[in-house]
Length: 337
Length: 175
Image (tube, rainbow over all chains, first blue to last red; front, side):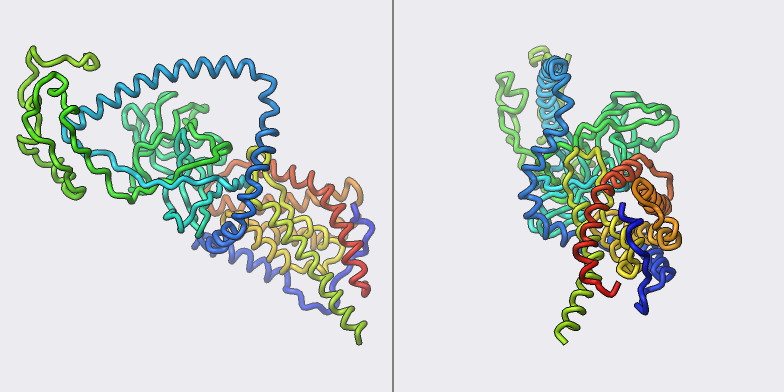
């Protein structure tokens, strides 16, 4: 290049800060960053807010280019891919039917047991306007921030599962730390068995799993969901499945942060969902053609739900079928066999 | 009088150009846009002006400019504070100490010289990240960035050379 064509010169009389002092300042910044990792957060949030109109503008053409460059390889195996997708589609339809039947059954059991319902989440839907893939950082930038009620720590999911969580919220943008990032560590539960583990990102596409119990055996294909420990993330969010990589287990993620365009930011701080007031048609006795004996129970306040779960419920809250075993006249649910 | 004022403004403008090139490089490489689906790391464009002017006109690239560009890179990249600051300063120190050796390189050798500076920056960044995370980290993404940056240095150096000849040289007639 041009290195040999230019004379080397040193500044004459210029008051340069000595290199040693600059090196000390750099080391000081490293230590300051270790003590307070949010040192530059305000500047980053301001920068992403400032550039968000530009990112919104270039999002569509960049997406088109990215799809084109990423899709070149797909042209060569489109036929095999089509066959595989058809097979997957047929299998997923079967699972969909099974899931719908089980969902109805769980709802009925929860109604009969007067169970504490799962908490609901407030959610903000946002566009992905930027992705930063650095050697030590995997993030994405969303076009929703404090103005939309987004706060750091909230979970971000796409249609398939959890992607990451918000670590920095500007006024109109927010930064998401992906599950694959080096700094991502979240508590998870592995089903079946409710095995507790920590999922740690290491900049690979499959984060590592560290089980908390001793002698725990994981199997490939087991489901991974958030455990909700610590109260930072909601429990039960789908993450992926267990995969083996030599002697360690990894999480094969369901979500694809590289292709997701629209995501949801979940707000766990929303009040828990109130139990739905059961209608007479919801009760099995109604399905059997008998009139219900007890009127529908009003929804309990959130604060009393936990107390109600610990103390025996009043008799009038229970359906007569739970006090006496089903007789021969009671309908037999074919799902329960 | 007018000549002196014009000369001072021109000199000041020329002195700012290397810093401006570094700022533009940091802004471009840290735009959160992924064209290759996240498979390729963006090049470390801000290091190119640091290497280029530290080598041929160190009076235009004092250590504090390398420090400032490293801080800017840290701020925009979203990573741990201080990682790229230390990396830029380490790379600057290497080039500053071995300027005679680097300056003698031309053609393909100049790319090797930049690769050495980039290696110093990458190694420093890795060691600082290991220190901060207190565990060994995967190195593959860093190697990809290393390779991408060196490939981008070939047109980058030509551009910097052009800027230096057309803008910095005429405005800094004292050299």
